[in-house]
Image 1: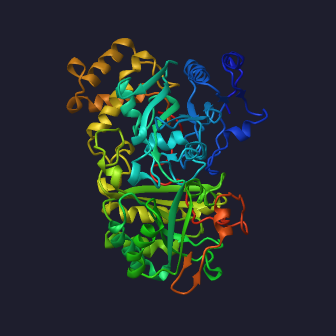
Image 2 (image 1 turned 90 degrees about the horizontal axis):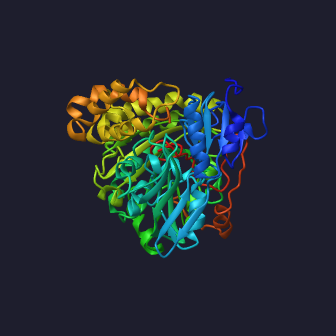
Image 3 (image 1 turned 60 degrees about the vertical axis):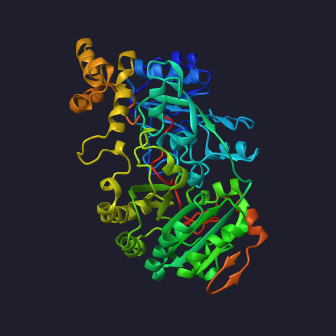
Length: 550
């Protein structure tokens, strides 16, 4: 571990209203802990920021001391980018306030707020914005990476609803980015993949949602796998465009009151449909899939929107181990169904599964180049394959299961299996959005936006590289600049991570079931599964969560 003796820690403490925590001090281990228990990194110091000025002081400190910087928003992500070894961790979790302006349908959200914070505040006014499916996910990481959720078809991604952001740049300046203010930065924040600064505040436009919505969950056993997945695929086009749709392939049925006892922990596949247009319309929308492949059991119920947002929490408790890969599919072809059905029974952990989200409706009405988001804006599915377990051994065992499914689906995937342009592309030429993202990062290098731990290039070399990036007259020149741009970015990028109904039984949902769904219980059952009354094992859905690093 790096010694902090050579750092002016007292100076940083004097510049901040929040605490600076060092190894061995009270609260250090709690502050460095994140959702994925497989990540065990030890930063040299943790800056627990309370204001944007605190963040600016921490960024300046990290830059001046050539420290690697990691930024923690919600800390909810498989990759663990929220924490680093031997560097500076900027903790935004105290910046978790939410201000709702109901008449303007706007919400201003702190960079460390969770979806639970956001939903509780907005639903008090019957409003909401797209936001994941696990309530302890951070708003910042979800939004900057995309932000899929039950409202994606109705309202678009989280980033599609972002109208402004307060950002701390690498030189310590605090700026407001919006459509007409730092427009390139605002474009890049929305899906650009990071390294543009630290977002301390998000401003969203809100939509009328709830307070009551309708959930339908249909479950099939492994022996029905191919027929069930094909029935889901063929029935989904007939659902209302605004429906929230999740296919949970290779999931285990929860030991919940709405599940017949003989099916507790049974492996299989599920379809979850969330409706916003009333109970009769929602129940009618499920008829096609029921007829095509009668489920082993189903659960249809109204519930509060905030309960919907938290119903999967107990399947992904804090400290669980996880590993995942993901890709886009234009359609669930018979070949893709065969892969999922064949491999479903090979996992070892009951929490491992493959959540598949439909992206359509409002998502597909946004132009490809309107934001920096790498996914194509057309009707498609995003497939996550997640190895999840209550200890570190479980995801390690299922890691090969994840990779085998991903490898077999990749030839069928949109864009050759790339989840987003920013994740590389197997040597393929970068597209316009990727080049524009890189240009935005590079354009501010002369203002000190340099990667901590690496020297600023000599001034003449720096100016020549900047000219190469911008081309003649300040315009991008992608045809000639790509190779030089890549080398340039290697030395100048900021931040280096930077009613139960069944074909076999008829059981009406009990009132106690509905109440329990809105009251999270952090219960481990037999040391194997954290099910209480929740639905399915699910972690972060969609592109991997980032910290609130823009």
